[in-house]
Amino acid sequence: MSDKKFRKGFILGVVSAAILVIGIGAGIYFAMPKDTTVSEMSAKKMTLMEQLVDAYYFGKIDKSKMTEGTYKGLIEGLDDPYSEYFTKEEYKDLQQESSGKYVGIGALVTQDDKNGIISIVKVLDKSPAKKAGLKKDDIIAQVDGKDVTGKELTKVVSKMKGKEDTKVTLKILDPKTAKYKTVTLVRKSVDSPSVDSKIIDKKNNIGYIAISEFDQNTAEQFEKHIKKLKKKKVKGIIFDLRYNPGGLYDTVVKMLDDILPEGVVVFTKDKNGNREEEKSDAKCLKLPIVVLQNEGSASAAEIFSGAIQDFKAGTIVGTKSYGKGVVQNTFPFSDGSALKLTIKKYYTPSGKNINGKGITPDVKVENDAKTDKQLNVAKSILAKKIK
Image 1 (cartoon, rainbow, N blue to C red):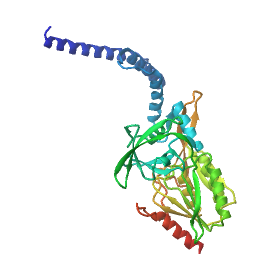
Image 2 (image 1 turned 60 degrees about the vertical axis):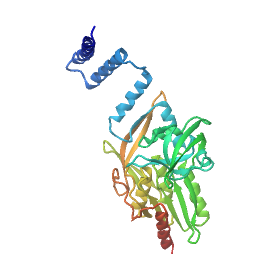
Image 3 (image 1 turned 180 degrees about the horizontal axis):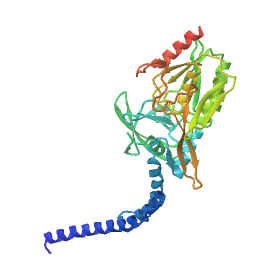
Image 4 (image 1 turned 90 degrees about the vertical axis):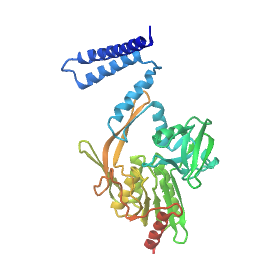
């Protein structure tokens, strides 16, 4: 047989196979009764797709991965960045993270929405990251040899976590020197405190409380640090929520109850317009307050800033916050997987929904690489209020 005839026969064979496949599909699809519901049609279409994969797919088939991918695709179809399906392993990681304890490298990270760069916000004491010499603002370029810039942050964080005493290799870029270095860290169990405090201005006796996120144990930590500063008889407090991605709704409500006087601190509305209010009692923090925020302050951090601002209980300093004004609920399944779904919008006490808008600071201050201008302005504002 000549090459020309072989090519012609090969092409005809491919076309015939394609027609056969299309014919099978069309036969099943168009054989559906006219009164077939969308759900029934979807189920039959899924069955057909599985049959076609089984019959013709050349590669290795993992039915478990296909099923999980179906669930993820279903939720991705909502086009909601905050709703997500978690596999059993992913949900376990999520629960561990929100508890304030996890196995990993001991570094808090954030991602720039514009360029997708992932950088370190904080390195925890006595952590693998600290021992390896990693520091704030270092950029994580690769994890185990794979580029992570622009990749989904939760998946990158998941790769840095793992079983205790296992190794993970990071390629780090120092933004100041523009030099790369590769470090191998041994994952360890890390207790991640989400609250820290100190006296930041001894002359005016100004207290400072940094809140990195709102976890299950954050409210308890917060109360301890408030008591600690009160014993030192501080005259004012700066709450630093910069790069705080948010966290648990119930946690931030408890913390606001410790600070604000009686009233509604936040309320929500569901798809049917049902309203639920969260209130504080009369017991409050009777001290001048400044809240620091930036574009990395989101969700529960914005509930915090929004309530302080609407109650006129303090001054918000920094840049406009992220703008996440919706609440999610997590629905666990019996197989260990779970669904996180956006179920409500939340509103500040005055009735503002900041989704896509953010909290506008009372005093706008941009930071630079040399000095912490936002913190300096916050100290200056409190010093004047104290006097």
